[in-house]
Image 1 (tube, rainbow, N blue to C red):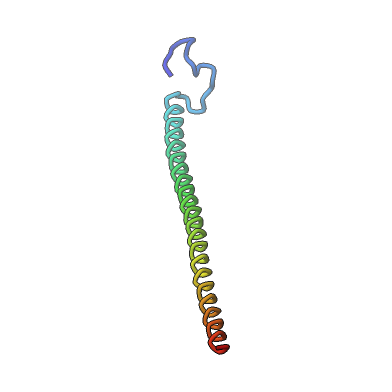
Image 2: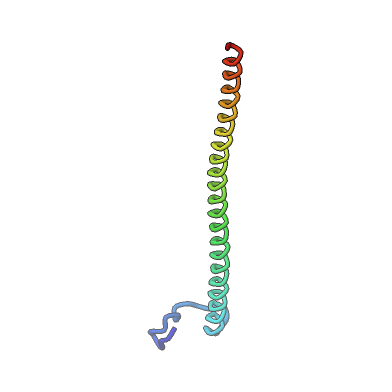
Length: 97
């Protein structure tokens, strides 16, 4: 806010404190606290976003693991059933002879 005389940018305003320096100091403090608050909120939002992303990835990995384990279980079950059927057929064939 540099300027003097008629070119003074704050000339048209009336200030509650009589000195413009007090107002400018108050505005500077407000600006600083606003910037700090904005930085803290930005950090908190980034933390929540990374947590959300991590949980989404964990859920996706768990789903893939469930699919893989279900496939292994079904293959083992099918193999066991096939073995039992072969044993039953072999036993029946042995009784016929």
